[in-house]
Length: 233
Image 1 (cartoon, rainbow, N blue to C red):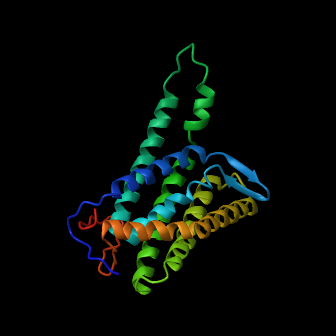
Image 2: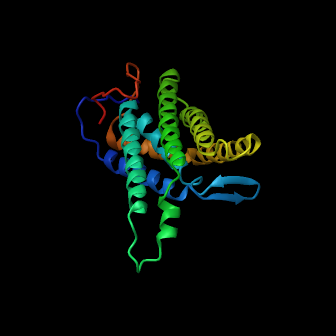
Image 3: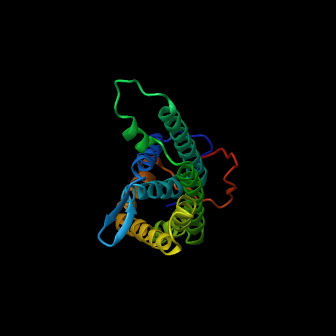
């Protein structure tokens, strides 16, 4: 059933979902610096958490529309930027003589600038690719076959995110073959995560559409990432 999308409306669970989205995003950035060896896979410490942000993006776009997803993406972007800036400032401040945790603190919060820039650009490009694909597929399929949208949007969004971050963060420090393997490993894990989470996504999306009374179709939406569009937040 297609529910009407009203211009001004307060949604019961949108704020909670947005906060959860930003929190998961920030945690992912803190633990993502560690490169892990899991069997034959070479992945970051955030690999099994960060895909949740794409599932959240799918839910935002599927239920509330691209406008709400755009707002959440920008909130996450600015939160990540603030974390990077404040982290660098805290590392730069001189430690107290009796405090011996400076090296460990710097290892966690002292992001290499290219890692911070790579993470921000990759997140921004990947999330908007994901939401755009999700919205377009929903209109094309007339709201049917949700799995085609959740998986299809992840395939496109994670491809952009993973490739952009790896190329910016590791260019010149890793060989082309090593970067290709890192991209392939990370991408495979993220897409597999989305596929396995599809049944849960179905339940969450169905429940939200019922309790919120909304099922947005982006048929006349301005997909410009920098546009400010009222009507869904």
